[in-house]
Image (cartoon, rainbow, N blue to C red; front, side):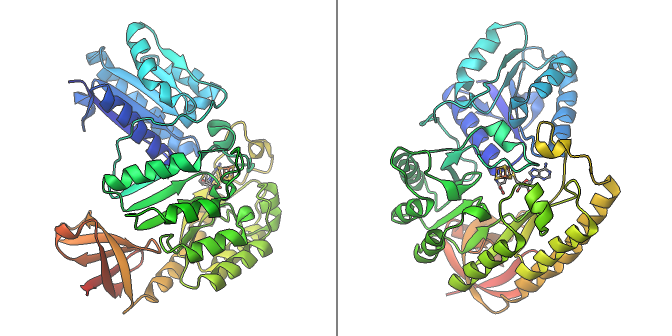
Amino acid sequence: MKKYLIETWGCQMNEHDSEKLAGMLASMGYLECDEKEDADLIVYNTCCVRENAELKVYGNLGHLKALKKERPDMIIAVCGCMMQQAHIVEHIKNKHPFVDLIFGTHNLHNFPVLLANCKEENKMLVEVWDEEGDIVEGIPVIRKYGLKSFVNIMYGCNNFCTYCIVPFARGRERSRKPEDILDEIKGLIKNGTKEITLLGQNVNSYGKTLDNSVSFAELLYMINEVKGLERIRFMTSHPKDISDELIKAIKECNKVCEHIHLPVQSGSNRILKAMNRKYTKEQYLKLIDKIKKEIPNISITTDIIVGFPGETDEDFNDTLDMVKKVEYDGAFTFIYSVRKGTPAAKLEEQVPEDIKHDRFNRLLDTLHPIVEEKNKEFKNEILEVLVEGESKNNENILMGRTRTNKVVNFEGSKALTGSLVNIKISKPKKFSLYGIIVE
Ligand code: SAM
Ligand code: SF4
């Protein structure tokens, strides 16, 4: 039997695409393996959101050169967001000519055909579509985590934040039909899934491209009715599109978890405008107030970029102020990375690297004590935890998450994996909670 290895960079969307690649390979009779040396096929599923991710892919490709020389029959395929950019495909053609197959995000479903064609050819096969086609349903999927599954509800993005390459790599926004989403979720539950995360670049604008328009809130109500499902999560929400109807749905749907990931990106109105985010600092704070008032125990996380072109110390201080005012439960923090083809890449006032790094460290110095303080609030609280299995660092300790997406560690039998348990928090830590099982 032929063996494959897939390496994935980037977001949950990419991870889920890799689950589809694995599903297609399994239906072609391939088996997964752990070592490159054992693989007949290596697939790199790439991310282009920041330069770092791209450099890692190039570095990894460089390492494959010797292996390919030793085993010329091994097939190397590269796909994902990076491949949607012509200059990157050119770079791979020139620097890594031993790659056998290049394809993009829009023709992922054609992978079996592309692989078969590539085996017939003696040269690199490149097939990247510039435009997205119709949504293709029914692609086989191998889920990496049975208990928790990702479900795409939409693809692409129409927002064109000026720093972001995603609308160019993933195309325009398009939504899956509710019945297709519900069928997928019901199938997942039959196979043991307890928690789903609904994925989209901006889930709040779900449904706009459907013939019979359905809002994201309406979709949540429908999914909440699915029997056997315990928890519903979703990401990502764009602050400009959060409706009262959605806040009400989060509040009323008992399976929708009390956690919202609401990327702010910056706390400066000047920078938010330059980023094309379409909200002000004041509007964002007002929204946070409204959400906290309606759902008092909600946890709020965010994405923040430091060093966007033209960002001054004053702008950066506005971001720190935002972090203090919102009191985030967590944040993904990023140093601005120039992305060729985006409007921000052409701006002249790029912030020097040392200043970006300094601001990044200051951001973490502000954020981490807030996250730690928020965790302390859970001391002696009893929280519902979905047990995910043994902790990575300690086999005798179990790990799970609260509805608010906090990691909790506790002692218990591995047999509890997949069940919901109540944990009394005895020791809040910096980035996690520790507790004991109670009845
Ligand atoms: N659609 C989601 C949203 O609007 O929040 C997230 C998409 S993006 C893959 C995830 C995060 O990467 C963004 O929220 C942003 O903070 C960050 N990001 C995107 N482009 C970036 C860039 N050029 N430099 C640094 N960070 C970037
Ligand atoms: Fe990128 Fe903005 Fe779309 Fe998110 S909403 S994917 S940050 S363009």
